[in-house]
Amino acid sequence: MFLGEYLHNVDDKNRLAIPVKFRHEFKNGMVLTRGLDSCLFLFTKSDWGTLVDKIKQLPLSQARARSFSRMMLMGAMEVKLDKLGRVLLPDYLKNYAGISKKVVIGGVLNRLEIWDEGKWEQYKKESEKNVARTAEGMMELGI
Image (cartoon, rainbow, N blue to C red; front, side, top):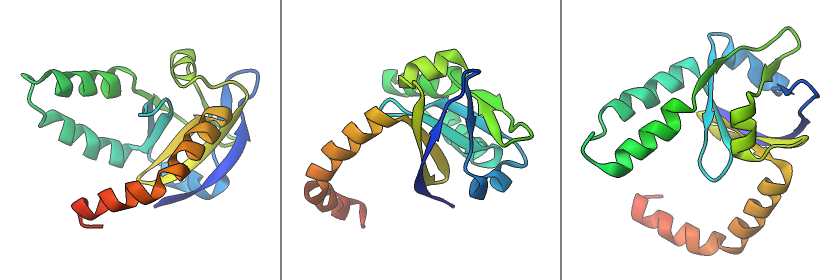
């Protein structure tokens, strides 16, 4: 399980160090893709496979399903940790998320989210304003 929030820098070669405590989770591979809310998602190969199995079940006849499938799958790329625990962020994903130098890596149960620091701070500030309303809505989901 991935939890926590970590501040890191992207180097001049577009490499990003993954927090040490998570690196062992990626020993069997990982997939980086476009995330929601202008961030990137980093999945273990296993959790990526679970998501892909669910995407396969989406009805091809529904525009929203096709759009979601395209966003997640066409933006996906297998990446590997180098000897120093870094991954290469392809330009197209870096541009999608508006990532410059400083990023926040957040653990969200089955994935890591990679955010431009400024975008994350803005998103977090807005979310914190609405936390009570959001919590009320979770009751509908049984939480």
